[in-house]
Image (cartoon, rainbow, N blue to C red; front, side, top):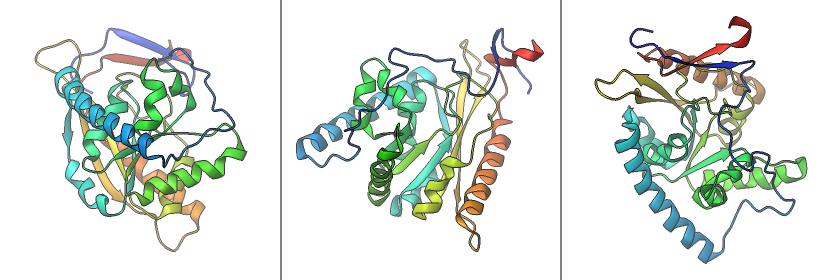
Length: 260
């Protein structure tokens, strides 16, 4: 990587370390939690909040983060089927709202940890904005999968951050498991990836995020589901890793403690 080097260093022990914490970090789902809401007034409020979120995303992405998105056109065909969109997790706020713009006119949903409910103000609103919280018990898994199917059938773009934890301004792709790639295999819809890279700016202290969208990726025919899942994981990881090399500067340097 050429360009300006970071003066900020974060040390980590493993890739599951969490550098962004909020109140209610240990929030869990109640046993009677519902993922699907068909009440007219709930859906009306949800639509209004989503519209407001789009406006906020436009302002925040353009005027605060100065994000540029490359190759968004590849998502156009997915509006006919719905899709899953995988990304590296490097912006606490930008990763919540940005994909809503990238997916437009598809509506976005996102698979997320229940700990996100602890985010002040917005945490409790996330289900109305399309948040699909991962269940805490196997007994809730059936309802969760029904909710994912419901959103796929609505032809939505379902966003997943397989790295799980936010590492702000991180310029490399952390290893992630293949578990999350069961969804495009099971529901037989395309997968895409979005890789956030960071470019040197002429003015300003922080880098300019440039997001590359790639795909579609389809499950390889003629293989069993587990093999399809692994193969999809490998192709998307390789694509994201290749795209990450486009970063030209480092605002925060991540260093393993053993190497410190």
